[in-house]
Length: 246
Image (tube, helix red, strand yellow):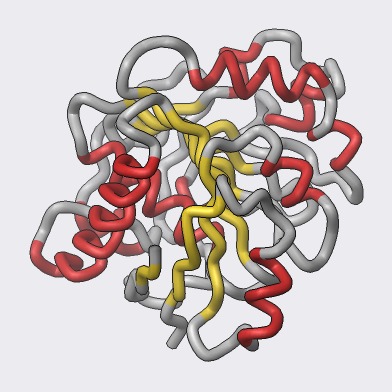
């Protein structure tokens, strides 16, 4: 797989201006195209048609590789600044376009979590790290409405310097299995820390069915991309997305 999702603006930046706030259990009104574009999110209107089609194409390729079964997909940037969170967020949005599918976006960048800010979600109820350390007992308490139909956010929670021991725990595996569920058409997108900065991406790859590596177009050297891709089981590696950064 070799895709190039164009930027809605600056894909490596994760800013959320003028956002409404959602808490776990709250239901938001659908977001307008203007707000979606402020949050660097694809939608169905012509103004971002090229970008939306790029993510739809990526979704279609992943579904073909996964043979239409429920999937856990790890989106892992080669290094900081590649726009991995942008790709993960918009890939999740592309899955949610399909009314027969539901998707959970799980932010596992414990040191630099961004998805809650980008999606305008108040994570006062905690997130992944709080669930894994036992501070939050109920998995449903860390699942937040995003204002995008069929797309739920599981934020990272309180930032942690190290997370590998949590990600390799049996509680993490049980959490991912529970999020995947058994209902048809359910997908989990994991937003990973950079591959070359820590072992966390490799640890998280054990939980994934497919892995998408994100390289900033013209930013990461070929040798660095090859080094990052070699961190993973080749049978799980779906390919590399070259993310345009302006």
